[in-house]
Image (cartoon, rainbow, N blue to C red; front, side, top):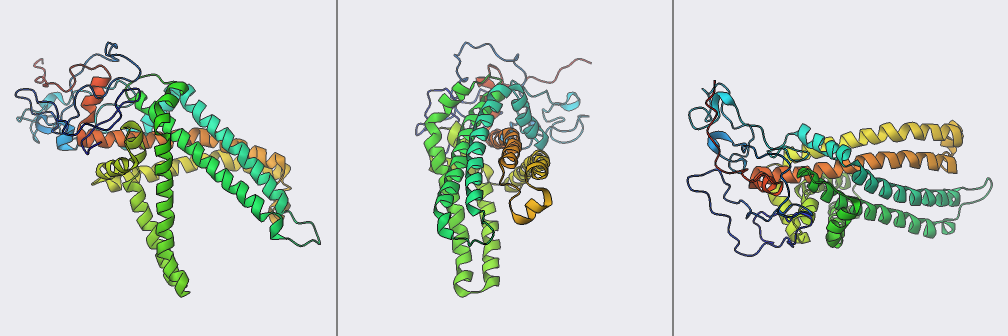
Length: 419
């Protein structure tokens, strides 16, 4: 895939590697509303449907920016000119004047225009509510699998770590097996997270077009990119660990605590900057059928100039999901300690969470929390990716065509002349 915009819709025959030299479509005569980087028409085929699908909604006027420019040119959904027709470039300069901008088409869970924070969060939650059978089935299955294995690992490790009164602990009794089980638990969590990310990305992409989704369909659309997604995830994780090691190591070798702490802080800042920079690589890889290298480059390009905005939305989403998890998990954790863990005495001697009752009750809370929070995190990432492409590449025009809005993006009519 070259650096030109392109999005192979799930279910389309495109492999996401755009042909070299592909030219954007010719602009309509006298029409300056099309983005110079507009993807060729037809590249966004409706998932799992033919060209004769009935449009989800009647065609509407495209929402234009200031002076009739598209979002890809203005980069700002607010560039309309004043509502009284006297201010800004939208008054006498061909804007909508006193009539205001027309409503954006909304064939699915989001309007086809640049999105605000509330619309991104609402789109993620709306997709969960509308397509709950597919979304919650995927996240629930993965959460149950991960937590069952985690409970077994914690129970075994806890029993091995329990020291009888008067006996002496021997690390060789439990270190090797416990370490292997813990590593296996982390690997299972990683694989589960990859599966959820891949399949939910496909479901959210269909929800934007107002298309239904099934678990089987999401799996068929995602499985071709799973190995690449795993490689991308491992590469990001290895890169983060490498940055921390390289920046902390000088302080460790010099035996200087202050230098080590300074290196750790620098590593945290650098890793955070890089993480946001490549945060859109996963949806780019899945939806554009791209390679790992291309997905990283696409994410960097889409985030460029919007780092703080994407950082803010990502951080707020993480805070919201953490609060939701805490509200669900901590009350059940307290109940499990009180009923099965020996209360404060169990907390003091470290045995509060070793009983089956404590582990199972806590795992139930974790399953519920993960089932809710994983789709929100995945959905926000996918919708951020779509939002950035709408702002930079006029993807809303291609999405509208894929949704069946035949005339969306054509020459906008003049404002109505009625009273």
